[in-house]
Image (cartoon, rainbow, N blue to C red; front, side):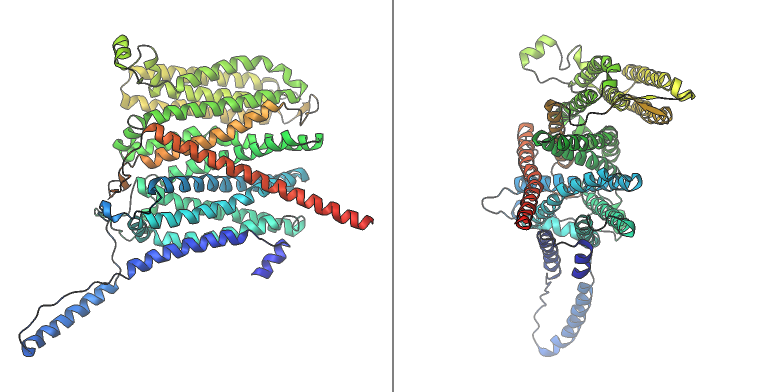
Length: 639
């Protein structure tokens, strides 16, 4: 195997050892849990008898009973959900179980999202380069993959630490989850090795697989990497969705025997879709931040142009994931409501409602920074002057929609303020706090962002020819936007006159209107610009530095948002390890205050950003060492 690996890559994979070691530790821990459960010995004390004669038949009966019980003991039985007490939770001096697991688990998820999202579009970009014959795409995808490599090791390392912490702090919980998902965990470990093989052969074999059949083999390795990564994600999602909406178990929590029934729970598919889209958007935002960093620090015009183009490509990928992401989130929330109204109300209208105000603020920041980058990008070409008049009205729409989105329904007020207003709801702003206004706002926000993207795409080109779409495409698009906006606003206002149970259903036609514009306008653009002419040269590398700071804000906003919503998703189980089945009776089985939760998420985000900067620094350090080595060899040859 090693000879095959060396032949494919032509390099040594030094940092692979850390990842394999982390996997071995995880396997060791899970194996230890299984051995611990299997090694429990059940003993049975028999009665005493006065004589050997009287004891003989009883001894025979006891022997038969012991044999039957021994035979029964050899047969595995489903494990019911344990009923734990405070004393059943181990205490490790110097460590808080919830805080420790919270930090490590969230860092693991951050890096996992990054290393799963980036290879998806790396493979697509490489394929575009193969089809078009443009080597720039190959170079860009290779550099994206270079940035990701350190992330794979960090993901595995945090995963290993997380497994140790879960087994140490929550051994009974891990034993219970293993009794249900043992088969899934074994396949997870196998696929982990498969992903390791694909990622290292894909990256280290890049330079040696550049033409003919070897390039096709390289694309096949990249496809294998993405498929194995996707499989790992959906497997781990089944554990998270089971904890929120358990399935495939009896009333006492014992496994009914069908692994698929436990995996395919009520929230599994919504969670899968939401995380796939989020991973792509998140990976794009982080590589955009890397490109922005490289552009700002580059010394030559050529390097600035290259990293400007890389940042633009990463940004487009992030936006492609950002636009449908709110709808995937709404679908997941709807399914949570369908499964448990109590959980849904707790999420959106109870203890966690104010976290969604913070979520709205972060999403608004993300959309504002994205639009600002698009507007700055108009300065790359002279043809964009035709559309600069649209920036101000688009900005007004985005800001108004943003303010509507994060307006709370119930204000936090003192008794004096409450008596002055006369109610818990503000007489004017209270109407903007219900979902009717928020659904309207988010759809308008998405439409405005997509419009900014469209004018940017056509800023330096114009349609040529006499086709119907070349002459009338823009008019049809304006009509589409107008019809969709009127429909969205009308449904938003009309929903105020309907019961809440009916009102929520009007979000579907609002979303349908938005998606209709997104899809049909994209198709019309393709038809309009089949024949096109350029209005000038695109000046890559001419973007102002402030536009690159918008990409930094985009990445930090995404990270903060993922941490906050990850906490919400996990915490709505409240005092349950597995919702309504396996109660959490540990010392930390309570919902922390909102400032505490927000502070914890902020600390984790700061740690992650520091690690990301380290990850960005690693390929820069490697390139400096390579350049220095090449310079030394050239000097030796010259002498």
